[in-house]
Image 1 (cartoon, rainbow, N blue to C red):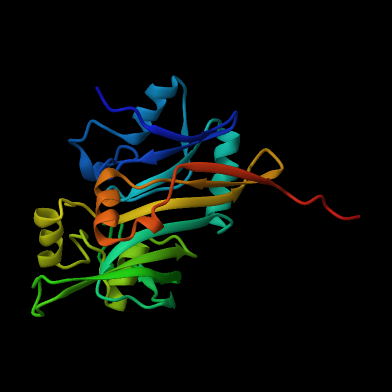
Image 2: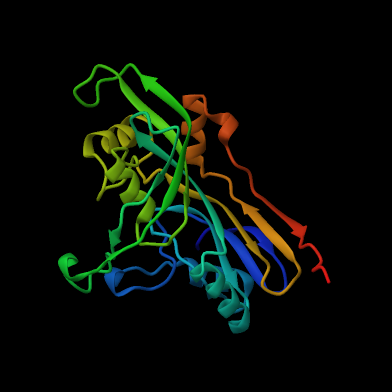
Length: 254
């Protein structure tokens, strides 16, 4: 039996949950052998239909919002498509990342349907900020010490693998990224620090409620692996918590 999902917020129109790392959101031709999906787990848990309105990569953990009706799904989907949803991620990267930067590398879509050379490069923007860093007295690469940073990422566009690709192109690949990262650092975290996964988590979403006159802010705690790592590195002060808060929209002026 699948483990119950953590519900971060639920009302008559939508539900926000913590997606575990490694769990697919829904069925896909690229993973035909899979039998466990977030969408089906949530439907079974709530006993009703739910409608996805955005996506998270399989290895990424964190907050996801589902609509509880087709009408709400259309409204929320439009909000995501028109960049009216603020997203916040935390990532552990190799090296000492920039204090603050806006990454604007155009990205080709990676949907596997056509060769990359045939895919047009699309505008992509991610704001990043270094929250903390650590230096370990361990040789993982060619240096006697190894340095890592905790980065906050706020994507302003929604390209596939955008945060992973942008940070890698900037020279700070996310730990655990098998495609865009560094294998020796990934193995070190998996074997020595007990974190054999992509260290990227969607920890916050903020958007205007599609049916009610308030803005909804949803925060999501990290899983046990990342929480233990933050505590080990002295980053516990940056740990997010499960929370959903709302703020009323200002009344329109005459």
